[in-house]
Image (cartoon, rainbow, N blue to C red; front, side, top):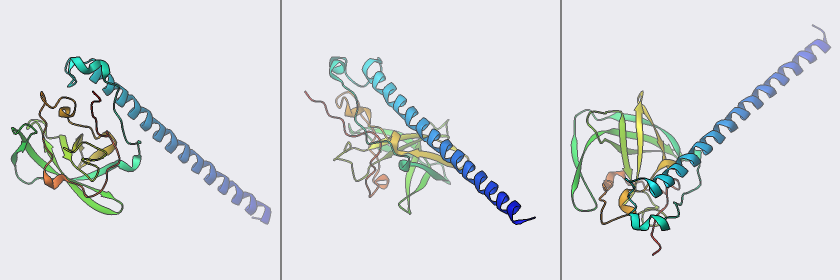
Length: 209
């Protein structure tokens, strides 16, 4: 192969790699945009539910003045793929609620994830003993009582092949935030208190009466 052919082959390979790289970047941007779009739709749907659904925790007398929710900016940094460590035994607990009563949950196991290179874990619960895949994850973090509700927030997720998506962008306030007198909500256990700020998901909600 002469020098010109080698040079042409080199540029062909480089061109191919550049095109392949651009395709990957384009796909990544599209996926990211799709995630943001879906998140926006999900949040709009929730606001509509809170405004109109008969099962909404917002009292009918206050629905007219409900203007929506506030959120931290969506960031894929807070969408975590968490390793699931199954509880080796069947263990039922009674989780305290804001009204002093309790709810029964099963300790399904623990979700391990990384933030800034360090590993943390949250206890995950099965609300229904007939559905081992559905996980309920109540937690508090360093924003609790400041930017977010002091009683903590919740994430619902599902177990799949030893992992679960722990998306803090989907962290939501308990219903008692909207109507403390008619709703009682599980209080996250102390072991599910994260030592850092989770600047994702719903912010604190307060009525302006």
